[in-house]
Length: 240
Image (cartoon, rainbow, N blue to C red; front, top):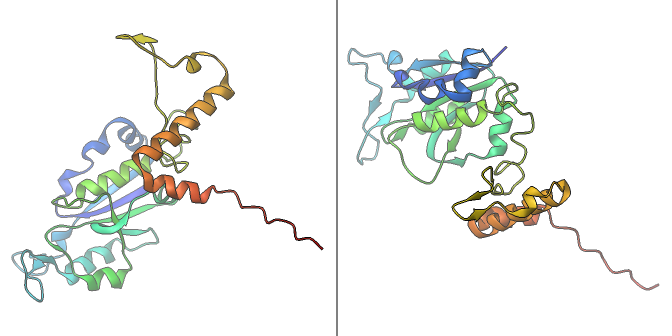
């Protein structure tokens, strides 16, 4: 059975979009993963196919109605994780992506307007996930980001089995720099260590570079990595 994504959206025509190309597109055509879109508006009950209403308590914008979202989610009900993409969600991490990729797929709810009635989020136990500290017009692009990150980890998608092992976030560090031919480009040399053939020395250099880049660019990641990999301090022996 292929890894399957159900996407609840007001704009089903946006999919597969970029996911129909490159690695994800090839995996889609070969059946490694599959998807279906559900048009949320199909679950509206009035003649105008309304899916939103004004927010209780006042304020600008509109809010997705709980009854409409409930009906759409019930139509996709199964054991897969149910996720709503929202700026206030828990940040998406490589660890969470890997967990999702190891399962049978996901149900993704793409928000729009000012948000979704909290009652339906609570009733369905939706996991709220954010792809960054910024606001987009809707959840469709975040859904694509999550799907792309998960699909590339599915068995058979990437050519080399170890391609993902040293990538950024996989070990808690950002990735080391990469180089290829020509070894001299516009007066800039490939580091000699990478041409040495000494695999142990190359591995040590790459690790040192990954640590340096992480310290400089992501102090938050470096702090978490340092804490996780801290060696326990030996307790001095007490004299009898």
